[in-house]
Length: 201
Image (cartoon, rainbow, N blue to C red):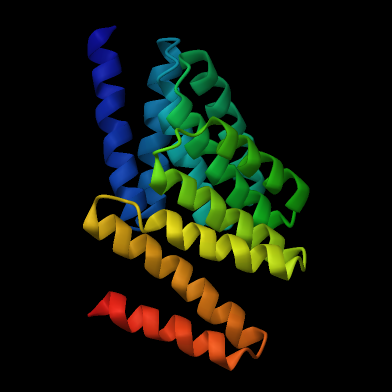
């Protein structure tokens, strides 16, 4: 049994890396193999492979299939009581909901995530805030969206890892630039552009 689980763990790791590299078809095949092994061993560790496969489905424009498999992942992570992973799955589910224009469900997952996440987990908090801003923007709640984009930016500023901090802050800055450009606010656009230049130097 241990050998089988180790094999599945290795396949899951390979599939995750292939997904990150954009090799979606290979990632999907390898993750499906990992899932079959985990399920044959009745292991809740299948949760991570299901999460990875859900992300592959979303990135290949299959948000409904993504949501369905992410629900399965969530059920296993709840059994394992892995709160960080539960928050990560809710974050992934929120993006699938964004694609499907299911904004109420999206908001629910993100607010649940904000309740569960550790108060000093600035990367996850920032991602939840950032996605909530996207949700409110699509619902035409522009003031709320603007406030949350800034909130995510300030949360990302607290991340200790320099690379992750900069990359995350730039994501919020780019959303704010698009936001102010769309709304014709030149002064705020210029202010944010200055922030971006400072961050890139």
